[in-house]
Length: 106
Image (tube, rainbow, N blue to C red; front, side, top):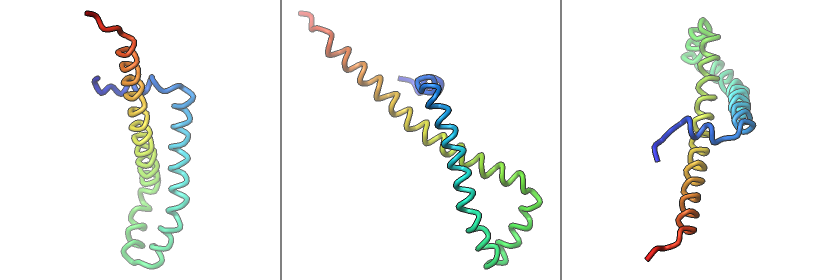
C-alpha cells in the first residue's frame, strides 16, 4: 500500500482532526508558558543568553511565530504517525478478515 497522506487524513473523522489541531495549539501554548521562566533564568545568569535575547528581541514576532509553528508542526507530525499506524492496521485487519472468509477452491 502506497504512503498517501490524503487517504490517512480523510480516514480520521472531522471531529478528531479538529481535536488534534486544538491539542497541538494547546501543547504549543503550554510549552511556551513552561519555557518562559527558563529563558528568564538564563537571561539573568548568562551574558551570552542576555545578548542573544537582545538581538532576538528585534525579531520578536518572528521568533514567537517560528517557535509556535515548530511546536505545532512537531505535534501534528507525531499525531499523523499515530493515525497512519492505525490506518494501516485497519486495512491489514480488513484484508485478513477477507482472506479468512474466502473459501478454498479445489
